[in-house]
Length: 114
Length: 114
Image (tube, rainbow over all chains, first blue to last red; front, top):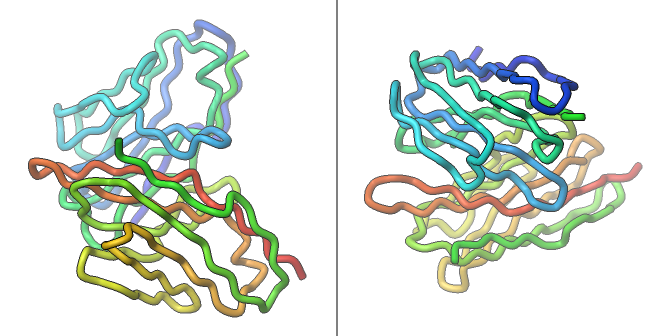
């Protein structure tokens, strides 16, 4: 089954404690992306990757890092989380050109930073 | 500035009734427009995609329209069901130098009441 998986699904942490949210896709997609979703603001792109070892900033990259060492994985790293990073995070992947199905989204990770 | 505005913000309808959601955009250069359905606590799922030359596209009880001249799209839901309760997100793609940039609306939250 074609899917994007994220782990963990729920995470409560404290300010400053480094964390990583993993993302994996099984569709051999070149393009992967991370979004955060906050009430009233919709989905905002954090980082994206066009292919292995190619990453770039989205609209709200501050406080986040990513890496793309393998095609299927695209982890999101918060080196020193702060309360304003409390949000719902989605990983997504798609074919390079967008394809007919658009982006496949993961199930989401709800992060709370105390 | 590239923007996507959706209306209404929220909507409550009775089961079996029809409804129409609106999406206005100022995205250039326009590539395509997608409607996504997002169930509570889940990632968005693509419903339809429309390119510049397409006026109408259906997916079951969902029918999307696009007026590229006025930069407006609508999503019509026929004979609503309780399972249609979700947020509906309009996403417009801008194609720039071969790279696709996505602009997200903030969504319309639909509640179908029995």
